Length: 357
Ligand SMILES: Nc1ncnc2c1ncn2[C@@H]1O[C@H](COP(=O)(O)OP(=O)(O)OP(=O)(O)O)[C@@H](O)[C@H]1O
Image 1 (cartoon, rainbow, N blue to C red):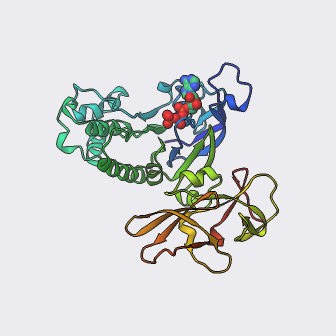
Image 2 (tube, rainbow, N blue to C red):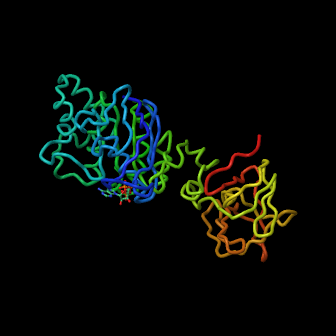
Image 3 (cartoon, protein in one colour):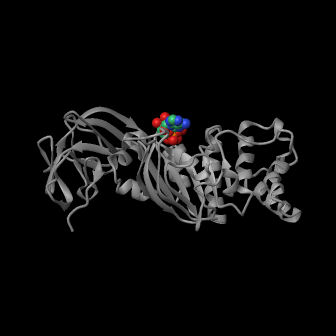
C-alpha cells in the first residue's frame, strides 16, 4: 500500500479556464497516509468523482501532480497505477463462480496458485461468501454481486490503494450497515490505503479514519469524525455533518461576547472584533432550555420525539435554531435557550476564526 500525495492538484473541464469558477476542483494539496482510510464526502457536484478519477488515472489534472509513495503517477494510465477499484454497480463475470471471480484479478497478475487459493479463501471468509463460493454469479442478488465486487477489490494485497465510488448504493439498508462495519474491520486487520467516495455522512463517519469534506470544488476540511463535529472549519461542514446540523446565526463578535439579534451570547474564548460577515455556530446538542441571565427567546415550530431525546426546531428572530433536548422536561409556553459557551464557534466569511491566545 502507498501514501498518496496530491501535490497542488486542480482541475477544469474547460480547455482554457480563466477564473476560479471554471475549476470543478479547486487547488487541493494533501498527503494521505499509507494504510489510512479516507472518505470523500460532499453533496452532488462538489467534485468528489473528479478527485477520485484523478487518483485512479481516468483524468489527468489541469495542474499539479499525483504521487503514490515516491512515484509520480500523474501521467500514468489506470492500468499502470496498480490500484483496485470498486464501483457503484457490480463489475463481475456472470458465467464464473464466486470463487473464480475473486481469483480472476490474481490470475491476471500471474500470482502463484497456492497464494491465489489462500487469498480467495480469506476473502470468502471475511465477506461471509462461503455458502455461495461454488455458485455461478449469474443467479445471485444485486447485494451478493456487489459483495463479490468488494471482494475483487480486497483480494489483492499488492495494490497501492483501493478506491471505492459509492459502493453501497445498490445494497439494501440492513446489509449496508453490515458491509460498512465489515469494511472497517477489514481495514483494521489489513491496513489497506482506502479512498471512499460517498454523499452519505453515516457511511463516511463509520468507515473513515479521516473524512475529506468537499464543497463547491474545494476541500473545506480533513478531519476525524470528532474534529468535524467539534470544530467545523467551515459553516458548510457544521451544517452538513450532524443531524440536525450546526446552527449558524449572524452575530457581532468582540471580546468574549457575541450579539445575536440584540441578545448577548457568552463565548468560551476571547476574539478580536471581526470585519466581514460574522456568524456564530453552535450544535443543537449544546443548546439547552434555560430562562436565566443571558438566555435568548426561541419560537418553536415543531418538536420531534426520537425516543431517547427530542429535537426542537425553532427560530431566533428570522434565523432557524434547533436544539437536542433530553426527554422528560416539559417545554414552556415561551421558552428561552442558552448555549454552552465552550461549544460556540466563531466564523468569518464562513471560515472558522481562531480565538486570541
Ligand atoms: N466530463 C465532464 N465535463 C464537464 N463538466 C463535468 C464533467 N464531469 C463533471 N463535471 C462537473 O464538475 C463538477 C464536479 O462534478 P463531480 O462529478 O466531480 O462531482 P461529485 O461530487 O462526484 O457529484 P456526484 O455525487 O453527483 O457524482 C460538477 O459541476 C459537474 O457538472
